[in-house]
Image (tube, rainbow, N blue to C red; front, side, top):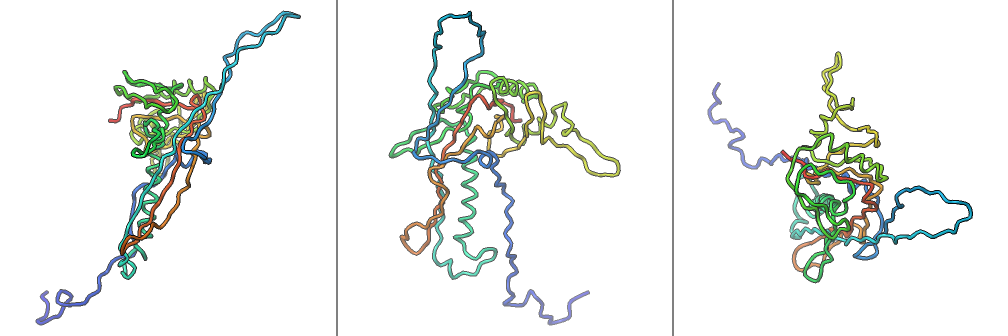
Length: 316
């Protein structure tokens, strides 16, 4: 049908108010499993230090009656350290914003402060997993913390070739090698090595790509695809993996490099904080408001031997 003559419809009208929802949708991931699980402690200096030690290897221990006792040679503890890294983000908003009526948030500054707080937490998670050596910094260079790969040397399963382990004291990064596919044999070998060195790992951190590989591991009922009678659900998951060397949880992580699979004993890692996360308003320098989010912290590897990695895994 046609519209009657001279109909004044919505296309002719002036002054119709806009219809804008007060809901802002943001599906960006913000989970930080390694940072969240690591024990939190306090740093008192920009170089946070700790000590590690180990028992000597077992040996035959039998003596004749009445013989003289000779003291064994003893070794000192190992002193390690990592530098605190400053994570800083800021947002500046003109003061005109105070008079505006906006959809989805009352104040632009508060909305963006919340966003950069979440973004900074993701930056921290990425730094903890990063294959990065520590850096002392100076008046023109930022301090940097050494990420997890720079501390691990004892239990490394190398799927590829030509890679090289770091020194293990945070002063250098791992040298990447040629990549080959991650496999169950690689994982089991690393788990066995950690157990033999005294570790009890409880979490595997790995990318979505490597998680799909792990879903193909055999011998775990949780990972088998199954359709139950009268149920349309298809179940394929791998949450807990039971091995002779311990029971471990697989946790997909978005911030670690896909080529690295971390097998961690979570209580052997700490995040030492020199300056906890703080939201402060900076001095005004004009007709605007600036707020800063700042955190200063570092990573502590309490025991290299309790953790391991499968490195140089193919990512496609």
